[in-house]
Each structure stands twice: as C-alpha cells, then as structure tokens.
Amino acid sequence: KVSGVFVGATTGNAALAAEGVRRLRTNLSFMDVDNPPRAIVVTSPKQGDGKSTVAVNLAAAIAASGQPVTLVDADLRRPNIAPVLGIDDTVGLTDVLTGRLALDDAVQPHPSIDGLTVLTSGTRPPNPSEILGSQAMRGVIKDLAAEGMVIIDAPPLLPVTDAAVVATAADGALVVVSAGRTLDTELGSALSHLRTVNAR
Image (cartoon, rainbow, N blue to C red):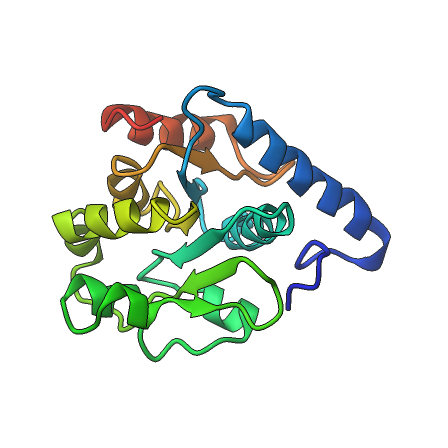
C-alpha cells in the first residue's frame, strides 16, 4: 500500500526514506534541464535489491509533485507492481503489446494517488525479451511519455537481458543496489550490460 511514505520502510526510517525518494525525483528532473527525461527504467543487478519498491515510491513521489506519471510493470517474469499496490492484474502490458487490448483500456488510475496511473504486466508471455524489445513496446513508451513521466519496473540485469532491452527505448536507467550486499563486480557487470546497448 502506498500512502505517501516509503513502501517497505519501518516506522522509524519512513520519513528518511521518503525524503530520499523526493531527492531522487528532484535529481532526475535536473539531469538534463533542456531535455528532461520522460521515461526511466528502474532495474537492479539481482533479484531482491528493491527495484520495485523504488519504482513504486518514485512514481508516487512524482505524482505528489503534481506531474502525471504512469508506472509500468515490465518485469514479465516476476511481476510485483499489482500485488504491492493491490490492483487488478487481469490485463496489462502484454495484452497491449500483442494487440489484444488498446493502451487506454489497459492503464488503470491508482485508487488513492491522484496523477498516478498503472500499467500492470498482464499475462506472462513465453518470450519476455522478444516482446519487450518489440516496436510495439517502443510505441507504448512513446505514447505514455507524451502524457507524462513513465517509470518502468524491469527485471534485474544479471540474470536476463530484458531491462537492457527496455532501456534502449527509454531516456535512461536507474540501477538500484543493496547497501552492504551488492558486490562491486555485480554492479560493474550490470552497468556493462547497459553500456553494451548504449543505454543511458
């Protein structure tokens, strides 16, 4: 549940975490003042680093600032967004990419956060990398970015290529690491995957 405080944080550090997310939101807006990023992929080296938590809270913080934002669950292998937000995942991104549903019919407004809409993962496909690298995916990102910011929760970089593939269609990637747990070599390999496809 998102209620303005950092999802997954304990009561003691919730305010600190929320301020960290707001700072992250501000830093993104100043990345390129003349051409601010509209679509950001949130990923991590490995599973369990907190990428979905950061994606959800970053999207909520952007919406709280008054800017419309769509949170997209592009982790087609282990989707987390619908369960975290408590919303329906019957249809979503894959249904749009395969032409079964129009984008406008798949995007859901968040029940309690004004300005936040959500595109869940939808039906799990047998070929996630291929479907995420499609022209249809580029079209979805472009269409959503025309309406506001787009935060894309993507799978971790080390096990699969999905996040790197999606990052080529976005303005940049944010890599979430676990303090005291992520190894330098893991982060280096993850960033190398992004550099290989010329992702920002």
